[in-house]
Length: 151
Image (cartoon, rainbow, N blue to C red; front, top):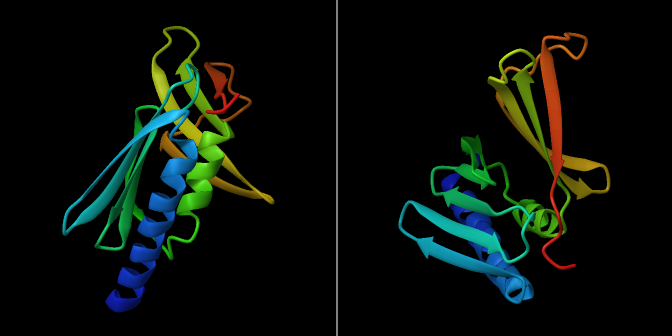
């Protein structure tokens, strides 16, 4: 963990960076933000059907949360927050893949993984549930690729 004063400085920089980013997508998405002493939150809803809506909550306790198309990942370690605008850019560019695993017999959900290609070989990936072994025929994997906000 970073010292509190350094983290607060990086948090302020990340928030200002995202506030600067919001007008760049204002013609293709609706962005709402709110702030309290404990967090800063942005929720982005694209106008294009098939693009990925998202929400990012930057918390004062050096944690953050992300919701991508309704799939929530909470209490993630914030690190230095330098990549939060790159994450927003990549989502708006449509570089998001949602992989879902279900049972072959009943269609019961097993796991969901969201991967955002940040460019230059970097990826943001989070998973809910336990991903089955690829050689196991009892499960079906379905990938959904999202559209860019601007087409």
